[in-house]
Length: 242
Image (cartoon, rainbow, N blue to C red; front, side, top):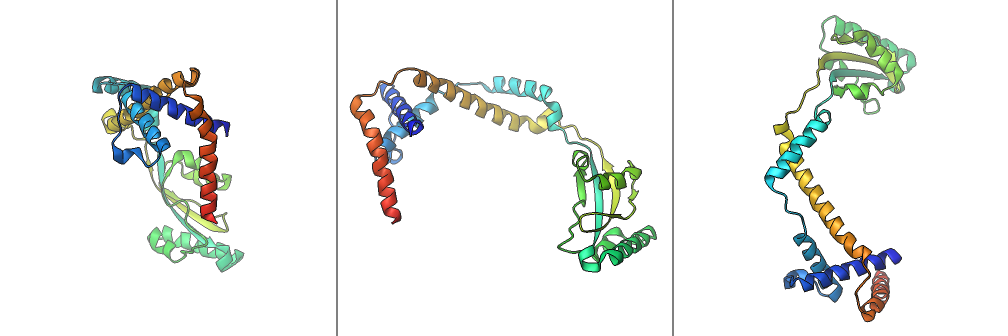
């Protein structure tokens, strides 16, 4: 309750400051109540206090941030994998292992991995490791999977059949995709947009702190009305639900 009243007091202080500066809000934005009108005034004031930062300054800050955080904008290495899983629930433990091992022999013999894998598509046994998987993700997978992939290292090929996730699995390493460094031009617009938003937020916060620290200059009547307005509104909303 105290926080709600503090917020209302701050809004009214800002609205008073807006009126001092001669700010007027259009009727269509003022709302139907005095509180709505004063809230619109406070919002209009905040739009005027945003620090004006030139495009040249934004560009300079963006370049500096990119240099400091360059690694955050580059993609990490990834493995392109294909995953075949034979469900033990569908085939049973012994049969599932035999089916997976036979699938491996077929692929080694020249059959296409995807064609063979489609024979075992099961909604209860999805192929979690199909597609481009970031190396960072593979560092946190089950040790059994890491151990199975380890012999391949950076060379394309097939793992041995291994058990896990409710089935017997076979993973093919198709290729290793090296990290790609992103250029400044590729992220320039996004950086500038983020920095502009940060500047606007910091400016508004700094401006409002002055009003939070200074004593309220509202009249007693306005302060006394705040709790009653809140509870009246809450009671009306509750009655409406009934």
